[in-house]
Image (cartoon, rainbow, N blue to C red; front, side, top):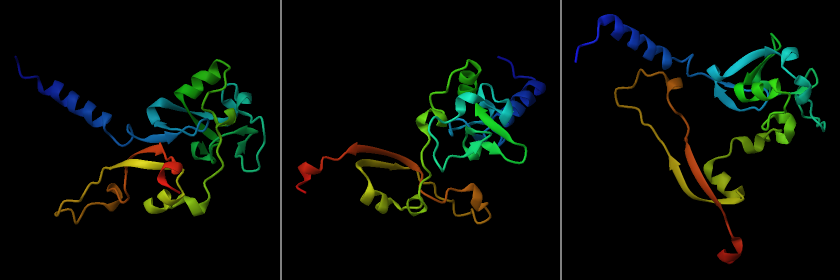
Length: 176
């Protein structure tokens, strides 16, 4: 076994830095389905140039729909200054083949915005209004090391992040 040449090592290191860079790991919102996706798995189109964009017209109009040139799109995936939309690979492939993407907002997947009163609920408040009883919470909490006084606070988690498993609660068996 031979030690790799310096040029090969430098190439591997540069590739690793690129693959883990902020730009490569950046997420974008698909304007068609409102899903978060890797920026590498999405393309930007002028709204009028989206293939078969007529498929994205909602069948039923709602007063809170965000329509752009008559089509239903997620505003977080739109650049208003340039009138461009970010579209994920899955939605783009469907539209290219003349099919309405399964998760497109115009395919009855649009949800009314969450009311402000419900958007910032704490964990206990979620439990009080939940339709399902959580059986387990798995939180991944990361603490700051003692020598981290100079860390940038925007690079640290400042809220709970985690996974939650929920199960339908049979209230009749609880004696209520």
